[in-house]
Image (cartoon, rainbow, N blue to C red; front, side, top):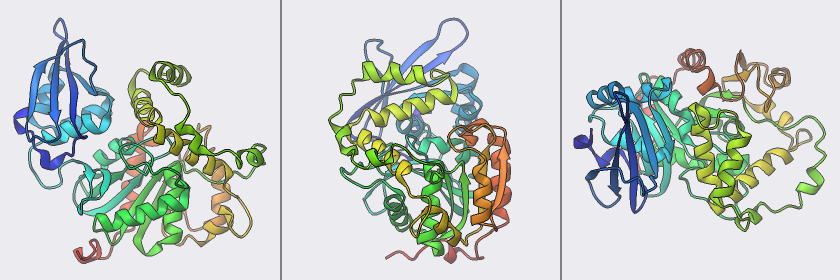
Length: 395
């Protein structure tokens, strides 16, 4: 795998990084460190130094490593099925997998830089009609790895880090509301040379996708909203007080890893295994950064304070959605109850709805059912024939 290392598929973080590879089974485990320098085109492999903390970790049994050595695309399937465990910095870990894959059209790419040199943190794979994916509050582009894996055979699947999260820029004092994020996504369309695309949004990303459909309907071929964040219809008793709280104060909040890490893991069931561990790692990676913490508070505040009614209220505004739309609800979702569907049915009567037996993250909890429905929906709303419709002219 490491002999195939190719920087053209991966933008590593600045400086030097350490990725720990663990081979389990057949007696005692083996531990190796891959040392990556952003200014070099090669990597070094060393026996792991237990005294050194790794920036990312990949753990699998010997058979899984052998599969990935033959074809690293097996890594995404192993990751989805739980045979490959990825921890800590997912951009770095998945980037190493991308950089060691064989060169072929539509291979996985892990990027920090846009085509014109601007910072744009993304994962993408596949060829075909473009599908742009937007993550939820506290998550990152990595939350769409199962979806990229499912769609890449027939589509160009692209997942972005929204500003303030993951490896994206974290501008101080930004609004971090739906309008702010939608402007960023519209700019990302231009950076990626996309004239039009299908858009999938999860949770907060679903609200951003709706805003994009309202502000730029000419660029959105279809909307798929996974348990989307929507304005509260019930009274919000804390709203008058929260309006006076400045999220920028999060920059000054002490947040030592030794305290925050165990606290978050106690609050999240199963936080040290499976998809929960992945989500906690990505959340902590952002929250432990002062500007990431301020961005998280600002985005959460914006969600809570959004007006549900009135001329600028969400429920009146989304009546203007004309784009083909699919809403996906979780029957056991405690954050965005499936009962929201009846309100959406009144506001957007042309939309399709499905409910899955899951909580808030269907792409992890019910991947096969979800992705079968998504592929069916995308195929029923194809783009205009001809590649010119998919890609904007280069300036």
